[in-house]
Image 1 (cartoon, one colour):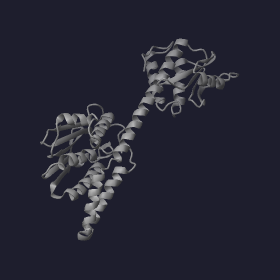
Image 2 (spheres, one colour):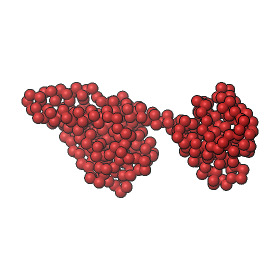
Image 3 (cartoon, helix red, strand yellow):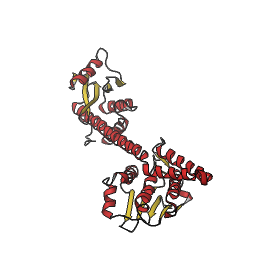
Image 4 (cartoon, one colour):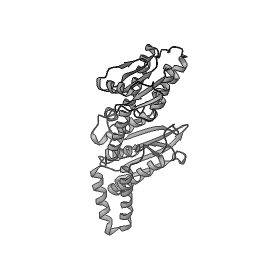
Length: 346
């Protein structure tokens, strides 16, 4: 938002408060639910007879009543087709831009101060610009989550199904149990969940995955999962644990010639929940781990970067993944999340 200058006859504190309200109402753009409230706020600031906001369709949402005998529809139509101001007091229409593109029209009825009109038009344009940026970021995050959900290793699927098939005759009960685990794993990975889930669901998902991997790798893989009951109800972004655990198995244990252990824990520390995924596998150079978190690793390691990015987006820059590793010394990935965060709920 640009520097706020007090409008004529308006208290600066009130101006700031109303301007913030207008920005919040316009998050969804000129076609969103908050347009009428935004128009009311603008009318209040400008002390105008009426304020109209129109999106590119030309439909005007009013606060107040436009003057009789003035064709405000023609003013809006002219702005949308010429991108230039139209009319003059007591009724004028101004173009509104978002990211340098025409986004709609501001219609002002009355004779408010010209400087105030320019100032408010700038605030509205800034709010629309920010709304588009936030919408683009949210769409990108959703696209990344969809890609993460679809990122199931064909190699793992083939191996799991091969093991299940091999047990159909020799151990049908075990085969049936693993098939149910496999179904749970696929369902959780691909289901159309919301943005958030509970740690209980996340831990159940990784236990299912690890059960399948134990069947595939046999005695080469030992698993230890310990989670404190008080953190099971903590809400977290969907699919934050599974990519970390899969990374430990695929890039830590599988390349190792001997046996390996994956240890997963979740505990409460004050107002935070700390989750650790540790393996004693091949490890990696710290520089490589840094590159992976920056999204510059191999395609099958981008899940870690996705998780780190989403955690920081939801909880702030102080949260995210911490990777401790060295070549031939295993890897430990730690993620810390608040036990309660406003707006984060399954």
